[in-house]
Length: 154
Length: 156
Image 1 (cartoon, one colour):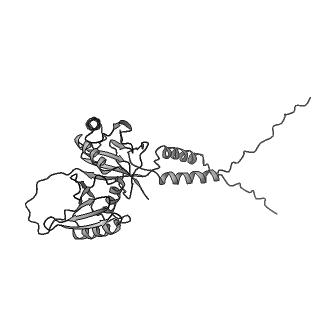
Image 2: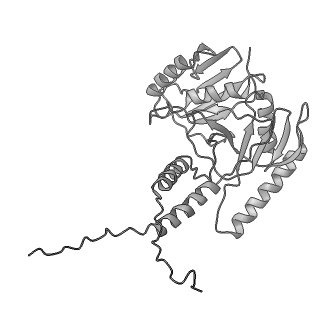
Image 3: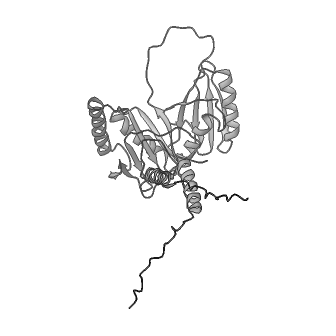
């Protein structure tokens, strides 16, 4: 004798609560969405502090970048000043040079910026970018930026 | 006369296929989550201002926002203050920034939420000369601000 088997209909999931919460979440995200990614570049006013009387054997880095429309001059050293010039387009070469400097002076993170008044803001930002951490690296270069408003000696 | 609708036909509940709707919602959710910015600074960019592109990844923070557009019009927290003079200081900007600083300090004294009263956000047009940047920084410093943050557009 055949036993009649009842075919059970598969139970349907109640998706209403999850849809409600997804809608609320989307609404919240839409309200707080900012479609332009904005970030910041920081700079502080120079602060003065009492210098400790320590005789430094190593010449301090005193990294200064002089930016004009045509070139960027990287100056280093206090007792034995050195300088190296890069054309405006040589940002990669400059970055390599700064990375090399950072290896020699790992504790230094300050950089003085002197710019020509005619330098456009975008150029300044591009130069600052090349003195910060490389794009895909955790290694930081010279994050502390101080603007020197005395101008560039041409 | 026979009643026309004497018997109601039992209707089956209509099944709506929501799979496609769910697909769209998921895509929208992923897109919005990806473009979500957790920063507490809400920036309304002024007309005639194009932000500089940068590789910076530092998140913006809440502080007064000074914007200067191509026509050298100055805006503080989206309110126009005036046009930047051809040379020298802009006392109106310094005065307004001083008011903002006083407000932030007062809020820090009375409210739990603390903000950095030394910080000012500066938004410049990408073609603006450094001379103007210098002058705005100078005016902000006169108002008592010592930390300047340049707001830039991420170019990823």
